[in-house]
Amino acid sequence: MPHPTTTSPFTDPAAVARYAEGPRRNVPGYDSLLPMVRILLAERVPADGRVLVVGAGGGLELEDMARAHPGWRFDGVDPSQPMLDLAAQRLQSAGVSGDRVALHHGYVQSAPAGPFDGATCLLTFHFVPREERAAMVAEIRRRLKPGAPFVAVHLSVADGEGAGVEGGGEGGAGERDLWLSRYAAFQVASGMAPEMAERGRAKVAAELAVLTPQEDEAILREAGFGDVRMFYMGFAFRGWVATASSERGAHSP
Image 1 (cartoon, rainbow, N blue to C red):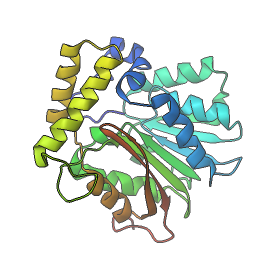
Image 2: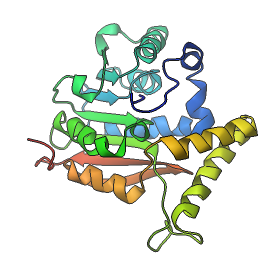
Image 3: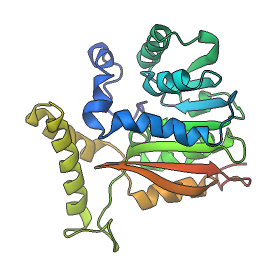
């Protein structure tokens, strides 16, 4: 899930052990988000489909999808071996057969070529530097069958430019700060100490590659995805479902 050029907690044993607490504390509606993701995939993934999970460390979405769709098979990829180990333990405890899930240490380039019937990338893209994001999305598209669904959820914050609901009273950096402050307020409402939430907000603002929704959608389309639709928004987080087009994007051979 993390990227080597970012400061990451995903190699700290204590942080890894506490990982399952994080998404529910940080992401509004996380327990509803997982069913939404698999519902969107199931619209096109067949009963015996094969799904690519990018940023699979921890195993939360793998467990959810594997339980709901016993015929699906999965390839999960993550650059953190401790997080992959945690995913393997979670799946084993959930009774998910090992022959249904293959875990790969590395980045999306380390994943099999597929072709896959669908893919997810949840709470991961904001760890990827801006200049590497388009190439990563193109690598995911390259592994999908035409017409396959792709679901992505990550931090994505408006900058206040333009009109409409994405705009706001302050605009620019003020708009971004407002949404990140709401993100921190949700953490406090979920039980985090205010000073810790504020440190986390500052860290997100300074270190993570948080693009605007317009930039995120443009990257998906450039990589060869069509029918790009936002299906989720939870304060600073947004989620999209898109379809692999029959013609691949500019970054694909």
